[in-house]
Length: 282
Image (cartoon, rainbow, N blue to C red):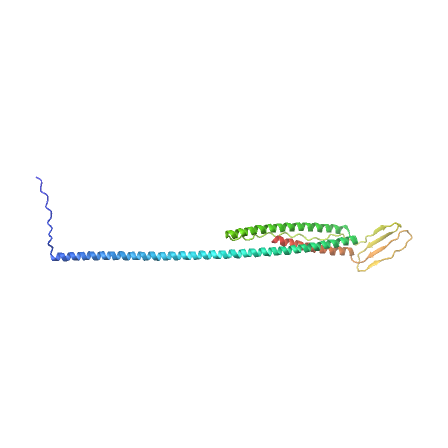
């Protein structure tokens, strides 16, 4: 036989005063705990928001400081670039000025060399100095032509480098890039100075010249102390030869004239070498 189902418990709604007070206290305690929990949650949320705001302010201040530093660095780089461009412009101006001055010096030296060559030619035509002087003058002319060719090549190279540098400077100005530093150029080797080469002999050199009358004259040049110029009158002898002796007692008269002119030519050639060296050093 199946037992009957259990009966539900009987709920009594008739609460006493004590149970009602306990229920009110429990409800009040629960409400107070809920309020405390909500207040704690609100306080934690406020703290979290304040911390987030403080971190955001710090981050914005760091970003602003980094931006100020970046702008200051850009401004310094721009000032350095402008200063470098001004320096390059000034160097180009000084180089052009120096080039014009060296060109004027070269023209002046060319005029002096031509005048000295004319004077040397006149001395050769007047006094008939030996072939050593003519050969030395030819060497000077060859050296002058070679130096002039080197000078023209150096000027062409300098102009080409200046054009390339100006083009690169314009590209740097367009691209806002700092221009490159000039590369040091090697110094040219110094050329040895030219020295006159003469055949200086201290022995008299007789020169005999024949004429239609069968007579001859002897000119002897001797090296001795003194600066006078003596000419002995012709002397008659038993033979049919008549001798005229021109004795020059000055110290190597022709050679001294030759030395002075050639030293002037040497000085001019040295000036031209220094001018060419200055052109190569640009």
